Image 1 (cartoon, rainbow, N blue to C red):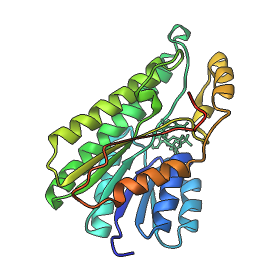
Image 2: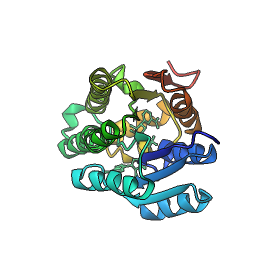
Image 3: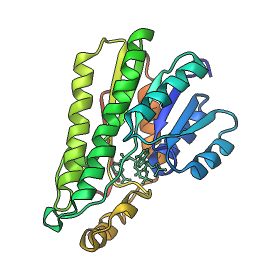
Length: 239
Ligand SMILES: NC(=O)c1ccc[n+]([C@@H]2O[C@H](COP(=O)([O-])OP(=O)(O)OC[C@H]3O[C@@H](n4cnc5c(N)ncnc54)[C@H](OP(=O)(O)O)[C@@H]3O)[C@@H](O)[C@H]2O)c1
């Protein structure tokens, strides 16, 4: 592969992040994977045939995210792509009052994204190039009952990423990928029994996470003068 990139992926220990790391490493890029579950990361590195390295990362901790980016720059001399993918989705109706879960969604899905941008933007500016990929959601485009806060965080992720695109130099590319229902562990974080029951049938028609990884691969594989800004990938049967 001639155009091998250094790609940082947050939330790479399962689901979409793991699939993105696996696909991009298989395509000849070097992936730096971050998440909290180190046993999962170790298994990913093992499968990565030398093309995946990993570091424990909590995206809610600004200092930790800065160190994740700085370490990658120190080891590789540059970074080319940051995939801000880490996310949680403990759905519930607002009247269930699960305020701690609202806070966690804001901390991971919004603050985590901002921490990634804060850490990598100066590096991309210094380098004269780079690519941000935000994994948002179909929830960035529509709201359903139980998803008020989750969608709020994903609308925010969409807006922050679009604002970033408008502000940065054209040498920095910006992509939002919005998945529909994808097989992963995401729904495991739902503690509210009503929301969990509703999700079981909603999520019955899920597509494999590699479908999202292919979209990321497409966006980063385009030449520097082409900026793929928005991709929605959902199951054909999803309405
Ligand atoms: N699956 C879907 O249907 C779907 C649809 C639309 C959008 N999405 C979005 O896709 C992204 C990935 O989700 P997924 O579906 O792949 O679910 P998943 O399998 O649950 O993966 C979520 C990832 O986020 C990481 N994470 C959670 N909290 C974190 C923290 N504080 N710091 C660092 N990493 C953290 C988890 O790793 P650790 O627990 O090891 O830290 C895990 O690797 C999320 O942003 C989600 O909102 C998914």
